[in-house]
Image (cartoon, rainbow, N blue to C red):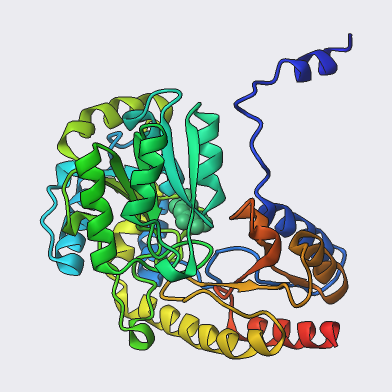
Amino acid sequence: MALSQKANHFLSNRSKVEPFHAMDVLATANNLQQQGHNIDFLCVGQPAAPAPLAARQAAADHLMNSAIGYTDAGGRGDLRERLSLHMKETYQVEVDAARIFITTGSSAGFNLAFLTLFDVGDRVAIAAPGYPAYRNILKALGLQVVEIETFEEDRWAVTPAQLQAAHAEAPLAGILIASPANPTGTMMTPDALKELISCCEDLGIRFISDEIYHGLTYEEETGVAASTALQFSDQVVVINSFSKYYCMTGWRIGWMILPADCIRTVECLAQSLYISAPELSQIAAMHALDCKAELEEVRRSYRVNRQLLLERLPQLGFDKIMPIDGAFYAYADATRHTNDTMDFAHKMLAEAHVAVTPGLDFDQDRGHRYLRFSFAGDHATMESALQRMETWLA
Ligand SMILES: Cc1ncc(COP(=O)(O)O)c(C=O)c1O
């Protein structure tokens, strides 16, 4: 047997996760662009704006004048202190800097949280639709993924009754919730979040809160502000990131806020898995926290994009858009055009040069009817994409 065949035969079962279709669409779109086509990218959740100026300047100064080294596994003390202040300023919660742990993007935070809280075979609940990496990371770590379908009447949130029902089938060890969520942008009300956390505490289920889209909310339109899970319990694990609000996807920098009983375990795991998050990114991140005015300008540009898509997508037959309380996505029903959004998205990319994400990434049962449009790009891209889609669909 040839070595490559033999090697393939021995790939682990746990590594057989679904592709992230948004990334596959992006690869095709990049390929078309390299061939000279002009593509409108609405497929990835990535700000068009760069990291704030002061963050880039601080990184540039450090790069030219100092060595970039390992830091403590949990990150630089100054960044952790600054994040503690951020929690107080933003949510009026007191968080000791010792509970804050800097990670290589929130993606590393998921690995650390799952490894710290769960054993192989444990059942962990997530919402459908939801961010696909949750499912894939859980599976790769040997955990059982329990997807809970969410519905319009519950504002697309997992309810305590659903959680109790899933726990009664077989005990759950944890649940991971994002609010605002990806792909919908929908948020849980503070009361809904509080009730779900208190239900978890009653049932002995660990609660992980992905708060990566905090800061990106449209309160002026919706009247709903994001609450951190820490407002309701200090037993939750909060995962956050500089990728979205702070426009720092490529810097790979995020943070966790841990209950006291997890700190040392997370530290020991991170020492071996990552050593530390990149120091240059930690320096930039610390300065980004002081760039509110610049970042609010960026958020205002998303508000304008959001309004445009909310008006124009239904006119193009993409309707029943889920409430966009935050983040930068419109998740729309495309059944007026197709029952196979995977095929539709690939055709639209090839023929109209507009890249969007098929819903199967987010919801394996119902996603074939949905498309996700990211409005994190600039306004001209949104206008061009809408125009191209209109012409293509006519
Ligand atoms: C809900 C959610 N969580 C986490 C991530 C991962 O972000 P990062 O690893 O860049 O912090 C994403 C990226 O799109 C996301 O949408």
